[in-house]
Image 1 (cartoon, rainbow, N blue to C red):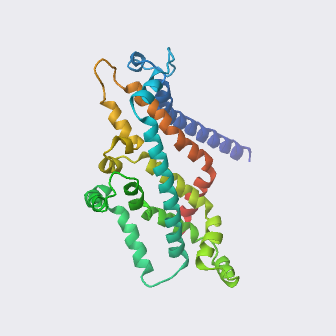
Image 2 (image 1 turned 135 degrees about the vertical axis):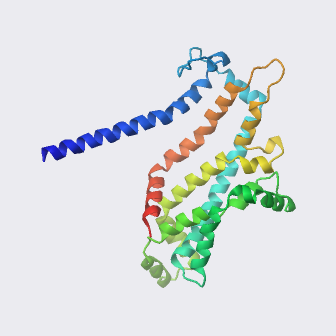
Image 3 (image 1 turned 60 degrees about the horizontal axis):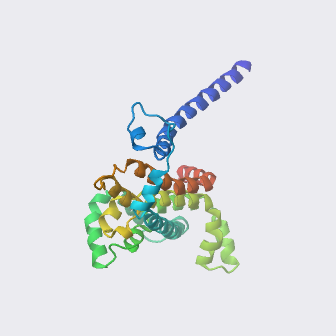
Length: 282
């Protein structure tokens, strides 16, 4: 008994040590990024690198907000990420509800085709999708960044797997009470699917926030750029007599990471619960 208890303590200690080492490895680049945003250029290039700035400066942030329309990019990314998240939550949960609780002819084949579509690389459909957006006059607008991705197959799969665990008796009881099918979805299924919705919200927000290739393809006006696209233009934009924008880029990256961290922290428990529940459902 004593040997078993000692072994469990040792395993727990070893696990905590491994997690701590992994956390430090993951945190070092983030700490270095924040530190570099507060350093002058000569300290950023110094070798060996240091995590603690010897000379604190806010010039990188001042230059970022002066030389580039950063807040404009920030607002574009925030609006697009929020709208994309809301539309994805609605359509994926609605489709997931249909696949989980309704049986109709061809539903199994349709779901398999839906999952098979996830194996198609986005680069393969980029050009046809761009042509469609151009024909609809949606290029260089929010529409092209939201509508083509408002019902992702993986999101539908996640919601379907979770909603299959919700007892069908609740739906039957709601029907007996006279609730419509949409009312059942809205008032019964959605409140019970909060963990899956939280997981889907985090994944969608981060995916939209960090999206680069597609916004780079369809956004041409500097004022409509999102943060990843706008920041990519900062690296090579060096005017005569000015220093490289490495520090300003680090400042931009620091500010960009704040919403993602806040979103994850706010729904961390539901996010983990949603992924775990969806992963174990048959």
